[in-house]
Image 1 (cartoon, rainbow, N blue to C red):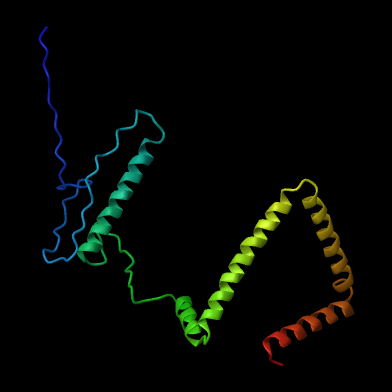
Image 2: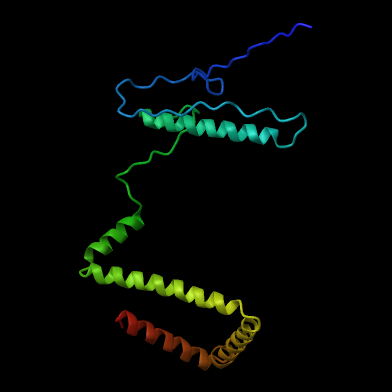
Length: 184
């Protein structure tokens, strides 16, 4: 019996990605971005329910790779998929970031504010640890829940059931708010 050997070789080429011809990259581009070639995943067995989903995911990853390459090459906002993409500008900041920056610039004692924020984060972390430890005790969480339900019922009866009590509570809340804010 004669043995025959067949050699099968695949060359990794970037000539076609998803059956599309490669785009020309600008020769003067300062960025050299390369995505390593990936071989396609093996075919799913006939009738396999997830075979099509894997190919969709692979196609989606390839579209993302093409968009990254196009962004690195400095192409227009319409990428290889033909879909418009969102332009990301490093100079535009969201409104909340601008507001935070303006508030931070107005702060005179940045060291004190930073120390206070760090102390608040540590206190929050420590409090969460204590609450977590209490929650793991056998009877305490149930007892605390009963106390909370009882206090909520007492508060509702004392301050919310009757109209004069509600008005007094609203007045007290408004007075406290004005004391904190400093306006009348």
